[in-house]
Image (cartoon, rainbow, N blue to C red; front, side, top):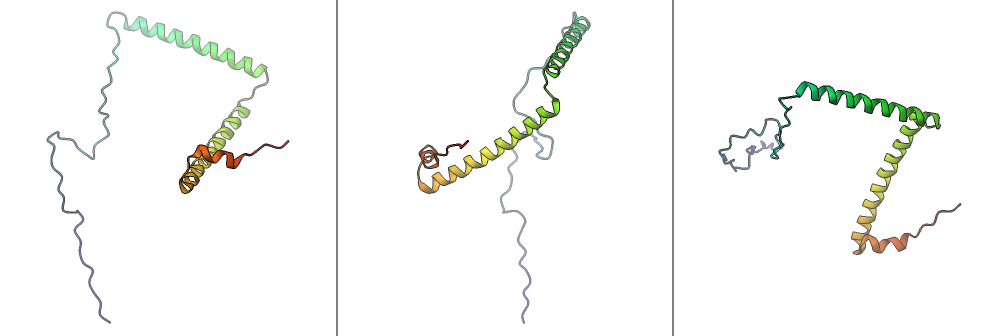
Length: 126
């Protein structure tokens, strides 16, 4: 039996990258092309404004603590809230998949998804 050696193919397609002259490094960290304004502290009252901001944050924390304690008094529970949020995420994921499937079905039938809804007239039973 005759054995053939594999043909070596160059790793590049023969196209060469043209240097744009901007000196960008494609392996460097991502830098957004959008420029954001720099926020600087005012020179005249930086320490006083920081103290005022800290005080406002402490007041906000106290207000949130009071709201939390009020909700706990009303019978709300953090664990139940986390479970509810998890169930909402699961529902959202299932709904997204259903919408995707309806879109594919509409595409195969050459209709819009809106035209499919009467075909799936589902009523909830008690």
